Length: 158
Image (cartoon, rainbow, N blue to C red; front, side, top):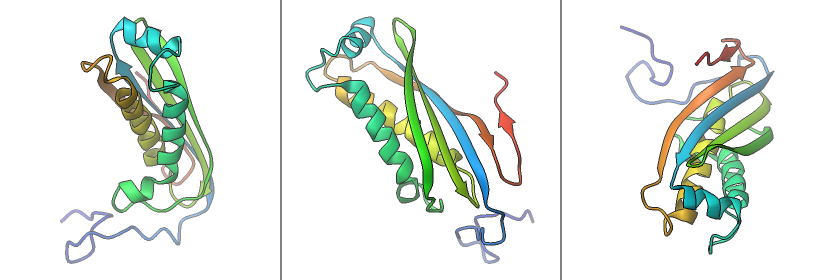
């Protein structure tokens, strides 16, 4: 039988004990895409959305979510984060890329925190713009890179 890190000997869910792991500097980067009508992106860019500054709200939401990942994802460890950055870049007239970088000095990685930051920022954009564009989609949320810890470096190739 395979050994699962999040199951105990009797098959019950458990939080992994990281007490024996080394404290190292950990960094994770994640990204995602929000696809929308060009008029919706124009409203975001021009700050004409009636709900307010969409990107400011999404940035704060992403940062807050990263800090509370342990409350959202079962079995994630509580981690004191050293920093969280959330940035936005237009990829086309209808696509907005979200990029989050999370840093911590800890015994476990911050991949989930970066992914949760991107996901929550994307959902906030949707929430703030849904009156303009109910056909928005949230796509391709993925880990771009991670460093630190026993498993070493990862960098997405595609």
